[in-house]
Length: 425
Image (cartoon, rainbow, N blue to C red; front, side):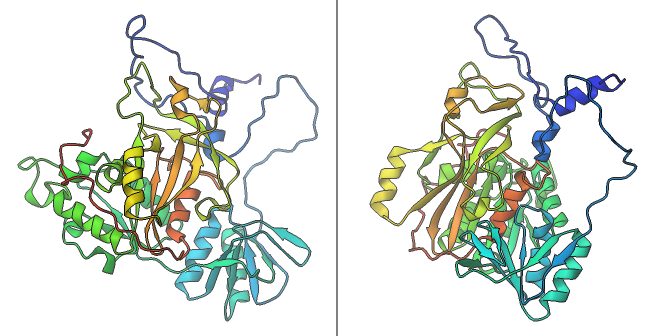
């Protein structure tokens, strides 16, 4: 690339290798000021190929990038959407809001001579043909007519609550952006709403974004802000969330907020990096590779490997003491791993010290403590990934769970709800 912006292009398109600078010989690494990895192709779910030698090609200038025109192929009473295309989520939310039937295929299948993968989106209902043509045109979707397979799961509109602390949280803002952009109906809830309890009557799903435990529990200190904005959810709010889960609600904890479930909900997991010092493990805002079980509904439409940004994230492993306790309480406890780090070094871009800590560690787990509901625990926050096969695609799937039928399992508090066990914030 013989051009003035060559260094900039290499910087955003290629991986970063942050230097291993120590505070003193044998000591901890110098703390990074900001993110250490920002490789754009990893964030966008595309492949960038470096060209090291000149080549000849017939090319023409591109004045404006335009999406291909949306279209509907075929006629019928049922249609199939691609689960890997982000705007399919927007179409699904529109269809559910208007009362159409929406399902996900739980097995791969064939229709009219074409093969479709597990997770294909199946839509039907009175007047569906005209509706999908309108959606295809608006969102540039390629939608195909097809008969529905027998193996599928029904979707339904969910009452979704998004926790917003008065301390202000960037990840909460990005999550709102995802909900707004892909038209997920939701309600912002605050500390008082949670403390008031009876959450299950108002919500099917509650999301806690990347917020440290102490900030969730304690919020602003009394006297530093007007009284309505002081404090956190406190013991009352924690008890209300526990009741919500035991009543069949789904609680989704992202990144730092997973500590709430690990500490207080007797989940048989622990964060293995919690007690490690920076000499043993240091991973400041780095892109890592993860293996994805795309046969699980949360990962439908994803590739078998993905990039995530590790940013002060937990690393899960089984807590053997809690696991034995839970096994005694109920044999119905269901813990599924949706994504995990590979057995090899997962580093992609940025800086990683102590990669052996991540060896095959779970990244995203789903625990089913009550009929039809789950408690997804997620490690690295992935709302930085703005692509059709990236992180917010996975996040969106958490809000369209299918109604599994499970035996009940009651969570019990792991402690007497102490607020001093958080790591600060």
